[in-house]
Length: 509
Ligand code: C2O
Ligand code: CU
Ligand code: CU
Image (tube, rainbow, N blue to C red; front, side, top):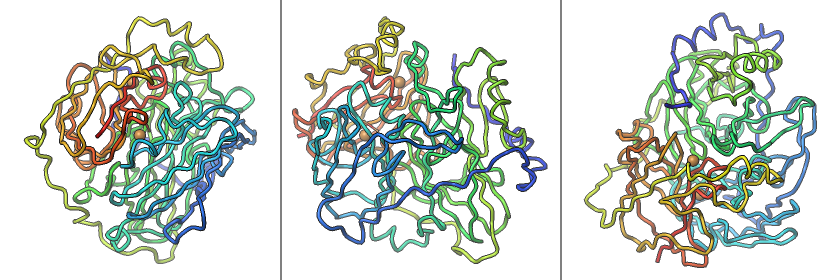
């Protein structure tokens, strides 16, 4: 039943890499990894911190200037580095010519500064929230959350990364020199039209599956990318900022060493061969560049339907991927070396893989006083074809999909939660696989798709995978307030589904 396939043969991956010599990639361009501009707010800031949402053009590396949105940038936003305990006085100016918002995904902040659909910023207007950072070190992000327009606005570039540091993370024996041994990677899938311009076209299939692009983009550059690093440990902080694609990550050599998930550090380093990242998820990994000259972060993802397998192959060939660095496999998934790390003989960060990262006690279900159930409804009988044809590539008024039989309604509060209570939220879905997200909290996953979550998903999370009618269950507590004029959202993070109404609202008081 699953159109998203997840079988990665280790043998397949290594076969794809056999004989790889980095300088033998004659026809394949390895673009330098773009380093997103970093704003270090830990050092302090004068007056308000400006974030300008604007329309721009951006070259993804194919020589064509595409129409994009950016935040202080031609595409995507800066990486903001902040510290626990700070309050950040932002000033968000909307110059994209249509309504937008800026949501702080992962932050535990009150509903009125959360940046969800209720904190609309009209074209030309400024939104000035004071955002308190109370939580621990973690990788978070910010993105547009304008109802019905989120998918297209994020696709065009309205997203950035926010790294929280705390006393422990700043003194931890971990790489933390930005752009040297500490890299932020924003992974996305895109479609480019025949002329090479960024394209987003809603169709019935795109509304149904969510948008799937055939081209992997890393920090706004078409993969594969290359980064030269020192001899030492290298930290990669990774965000899946795809609209809908689940990404499977692996390393060409050795397992992935995962140190942190959405809401902060894991108890200790978790090793795994494959890491599945849903849209919206963040993970941090360490790569040991002392023993190898080259290592590669491999990413496999689902290709859109391009007239069957022949279409995939044509697409694959016209993009000139060398079979040594990218491999089409498993009827419609593409695996590509998203990032090649090449070691140079210069001493870098020298430490061992961390064994103790955070104190994480096992989640205790007995603390929960309330259990709530949510069924995601992808199939409501709505006419997706008509909706897609309605124009502008926006997802309409959000009434085509639902949760518990109700489509998102800005004027309806679906749940009221008591501040400080621990609850169990159980999520299921009528069909396919969906990433579920809750605002204003971090939670622990009790079960995911009916099973114990993989070790790397047992720490703090704000995203959980949901597949079929088996429950996914999370243990959650909300410590900030969200009143009825500025409620929190819970929703599917396939952005087209969210825009189609697979979203609900709740208060915390
Ligand atoms: Cu990342 Cu409600 O969103
Ligand atoms: Cu969020
Ligand atoms: Cu969904």
